[in-house]
Structures are given as C-alpha cells and as structure tokens.
Length: 396
Image (cartoon, rainbow, N blue to C red; front, side, top):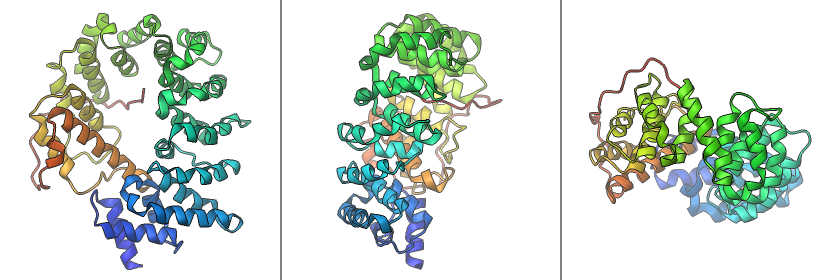
C-alpha cells in the first residue's frame, strides 16, 4: 500500500513520473484493490499516459460489464473514461451501459475526455441523453460542452441542440451552434432573435455569443460586428473581444478601440485585446509585449490569471524568438500545476503542456523537442502591466 500511495502521488504531482508509477496505479484500479479516490482521479485523467496498459484496462472493464449487477457504476465509469481518454473505441459498450442507466460522466472535464473518441461512433451513444425530460443541470451542461468541443463533427446533434434554446441552458446551446458552423444554418433566425434581444429567454449575456454564432452559421458578419463592436465600445469589452478576434480583419473598424483596451486594468481584458488587435490588423508589435507580460513562470494554474491564454496567443503569432527560453524553461519543469484540485490536475496540466509545446513549435520549430533540464533559477520576464482587478475569461 505504501508503494501504491507513493505511485499515486507521483503521477498526480509530476509531469514525467517513472513508468512503474503509472503501472502500479493502473493495476490497483483494475484489480479493484481499494486503490482510493486519488488513484481513480489519476486513471480517469491519464489519457495517452497509460496507453501501454490499454489492454489491461479494457479487459478489466469487460469483466465488470459481464458482472454488471454486482459491479458499481462508479468503477465502470473510471475505466471507461481511462479508455476514452486514449480514443480507444473499447470504451463505447460501457458508455452505452452508462447511458442506459442515465449515468454518463456528467461534468465539463469529463466531456473533454470523451471527445477523444470518434464522433461518428460517440454521438449515437450520448445524444439520447439530450432528450431527457426535464433537463438536468449537469447532464445538460456536460453534453453541450462535449458537442461544443466536437465542433463541426457534432452537426447531427443540431435538432437536439435547438431544443435547448428554450431552456435555461440556451447560452451553452448558442456556443454549440456557433462551433458547428454552416451545418446549423437553419437556426439563423433563432440566433438573430437572441442577438437582438427578441427571443423570450434572451438575457444580457446572450446577444454577443448569439451574434457570433449567427456569423459562424451564415457567413454574414453584419450582426456580429454590430453587436460585438457595440459591446467593446460600451465598456463590457472582455465579453466582446474574443468574438471580434474571431472576425479578424472584418472588424477593422474597431481596431483603435481594441488597441486602447490593451491598457485595461484587467489582465484577461488586456490579453484578449492584444490577441484581437493582432487578429484584426496582423500587426504583432503592440500585442507581443502585453502578452509576454502575462507569462508568469511561477503560475500555479489559478484561473484568475490568463497565463495559458497569453502563451497560446504568442504561439499563434509565432513571435518573438526571445520567448523561446522562457517557454522552454516552463515546459521543462517537473511539477504539474498545483492550483487545480486533484480531480482535474492532470487534465489541466496536460492542456498547459500542449499549449507550451505548440507555442514553442510555432515560434522556433524543433525547440519543444529539446527543452532544457529543469533549473532552479527563474528566467527574467518583463514587468507586468499595472493590475487593479482581474477579469475571468469565457470560452468562445
């Protein structure tokens, strides 16, 4: 048990644990040796890190499905998510069992794990859950998150998503329709009603996302430019900037307003403005210093700080080369982000590692494959812009 406890803590704490650590944790969970909640958390989030043990996980899952009446749904869910995170279709029969019991994994992080499975095979399993009456919070938000992550591949779900425009989950449904794009063109009038406030359930948070979704499904930017541009001019900038960034050069008329917001007291607003300005104008010079100022090498993962977002946007710009040593140093660190709680720590850290790796590859191809050994000394970074308050970001 001491060895298992050490292995569990190692995989939760370190990005590159010794191979025996994952092996010990997986075997304990598969053998149902009361491995503990931490081991369940770890295996659920592991994804490709446990691909060497996929056959063992699949065999254990099949055994539990055959003994379904004597097996807890929780143990089936853990192994199902472990396979799903690898994109292994052997997770699908268990997902059907969970769906029949109305026990699909119901939270947003789990939705992102399921999205690793082929959409064509996953959708027939999960879509019936969107027909449930009445709608339930966790089931609805989790399934809508999954569809948003799948994007255009979720096109077969449009009829089910439209039904959610008449529920308290309309905001999430608008995001899904926008992510699906032209295949949801038949919803254009409903989206316009939300964008203009005519829809019965339209609240103050709906117009910007609905207008953006209207552009995504129709290709006509007029409504999105009007609604999102007005939001940026009115002072609710943080909620309009990501949509203007998506519009890119189409939003040229708003470039000066966006540039002024790079001096906002809110860190999320500064980063969103820097990204939007570059997307609109193609000029990285004003944006790069703002983004670099937010890349804190000591960031522990707190969502109030837009560090990962700043790294992602620097990678998209592909400059400056001077950022290579800083990003490489962060990527080389052994310890995972410590702020996210155990249930999402591996997922959150893996996402940060992917962001860092992709940014490095865009800035200096090949740099991510030769990161320096971890150092105890921090790389100097530019002094951050003044901060009076922080604004949390929202996904587009």
